[in-house]
Image 1: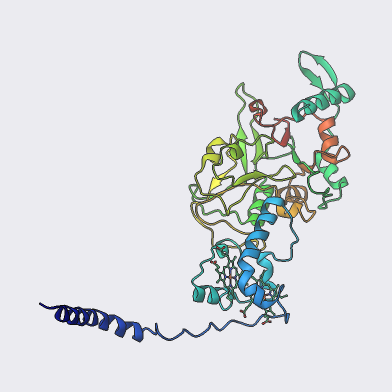
Image 2: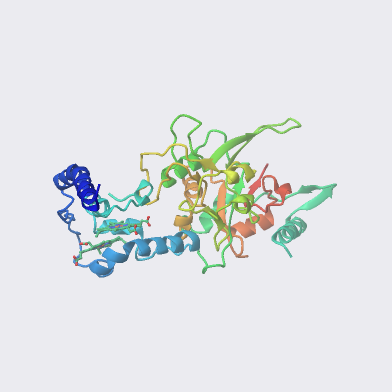
Length: 116
Length: 255
């Protein structure tokens, strides 16, 4: 068999294998960007403890850093206690959880810390 | 001079002042100062918290007053710290529990609350492979549950059996301000560090004073003016298994 023939066969094979995969992927909406999560509005305030954009990007570092200071150093009364988020973000399921599942993040904090 | 030396010296000093040594190790003490009254004098639920690194928290339990039936301290601890009772002793957590001592040579049984003794030489901390157990700046031995891997070495190391493993998570929140524990970590008494940091007494001490027998006294062992130091100076106190040299910070009278 000449080179041309084998290339044609290869292309046909790839197309045959890929077609059903692409078909289901499109059906599952993999080529469209999923809609941004609808986050519940914060109550009692118009501003977050830090600017919202910064919080979006950095709240995980903030919370873990403060966690060590509070637990290990006993420096309580800090501004960003995890339970403190609940004073304004009153619905965890429609705020924290919704964004976390969108982003594929799985913080285990809420196994132990109560956020309504 | 180590803390232990200083304590035994203090005791000797106290004996010289308020007691008369009658003979071979027998000491007659003046009527014991009242732990509960001292706590009330110290201002009820308020706690004077010195600056960071200066305090060394300790507790005195007057076992002459503690009764077998009273569960004020254990109930208050459970409510404050979300320590569950499932009704199945394999799963129940205990931060403070009532134990019965039967003297080897006969005599009346003793019932005492036993909790984490917050040793100055904590064996649990020494064996912890991930440094989850640590000693805070004020002498409180705590578990960082974020780090704990649940290996349970510490439970074996602790001579007081003060630690329990979370086999089963509770789903009930008795106090939403305090975290509960997830499956697979070890938990124990924290001396209610979260309350101390707010200048409040631990839940068990407060409950004992309010609805119990006022047998517990809590305070700063570094402060010579505190009620607890005055009490320890005046009355003979003993730690459980002091012979192990772990320098526990929970002292008992009447055991």
